[in-house]
Image (cartoon, rainbow, N blue to C red):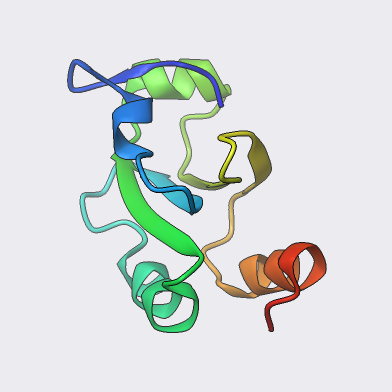
Length: 101
């Protein structure tokens, strides 16, 4: 995961728990709320979810100014990046890599 600041604080300040982190990068403050609810009900023991403001600096870091999601592994490496707002892909990833269904 690249290093960058959000509101003057390192992105890594949000990544305390030794879990997977589903980060929703969105310009809308309510971006990703439906997915967050699904994640919390299905995968709360494995995944922490957070919405990050998609400001111009973050868009420059990732090369996109459109909303997207990032799954970080517990070691803070990117597991995958996607543009769809769905828990399905996360479920497939968790099933393949940690045996959760």
